[in-house]
Amino acid sequence: MRRIALALLVICNPLTAAERPLRFSISESSTMPMVRIEDGQATGGILYDLQTRLAEKVGRRAQLMVLPRLRVQQMLVRGEIDVRCDVNPAWLKESTHQYIWSVPFMVHRDVLVGTGANLPRQQPPGEAIGTVLGFVYPTLEPAFASGALRRDDARTQELVLAKLTAARDRYAVSNELTLDWYDRTHANGQPLHKLGVVASDIVACIVRDEPDVPAHTLLRALVRMSVDGEFEAILARYR
Image (cartoon, rainbow, N blue to C red; front, top):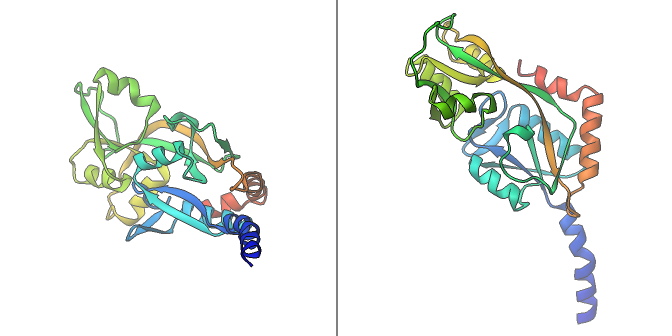
C-alpha cells in the first residue's frame, strides 16, 4: 500500500508543478495607466490586462506579485519570477541569463515635463529634476554624474508629477502615457507641458527558461498577440 502511495505521489507532483500560477512581477512604483494598485494588489491597467491575458492563453493562472523595485531585481537573479514585462535591456543591472526576451509589445517614451510651455535658456547647475526612485535613466546618467542635474526621487511616477504640479520641482521626467493619464485625471484643466523627449525605448517581456515554466509556449503566445493586434487593443483602452 505504501509503495502505491509513493508511486501516486511521484506521478502527481509534476502535474501539481505544471498547474501552479505563473509568477508575474509588478513594481509597486508603477501607476496608471500601466497598472492600478489597490491594497497592494494589481486590479487594472495595461500590465494587468497583458499579463492576465497571456496566462489565460497558455491555460494557467496569473499570480501578479506587487513588489518593491529592488526586490524585483533580487528575485530575478534568484529565478523567483517567471515573467516580467515592460522592460528594456538598458534598464537592467542584474543578470538575466536564465530568461528569454519576447517580441516587443510597446514603445516607452520618457519626456521632460514642466509647468511652463518653454524650457528656459539658462538653468542653474544642479537643477533638481523629478524622477522615480529606483528608475534608471540611461540618457540622463552623464548629467547626474557631473552634477549638472540632480535627481529628486519620489516613490511613484504619479507622485513625481504631483510634486511638479505643486511647484516643488520645475521639471520632471515622465512616461508619456502616464503623463497623458495624469493630465486627464488630476490636472484640473491646467495640464503639464511636454518639453522634449528624453528617451524612446522598445519594451518587451522576459520569460524564465526553466522546465517548470512553459517558456516557448508563452513566447509564441506573445507573438500571436502581436500579430492579432491584441497589444494595440490593450494600449488603446488607456489612451
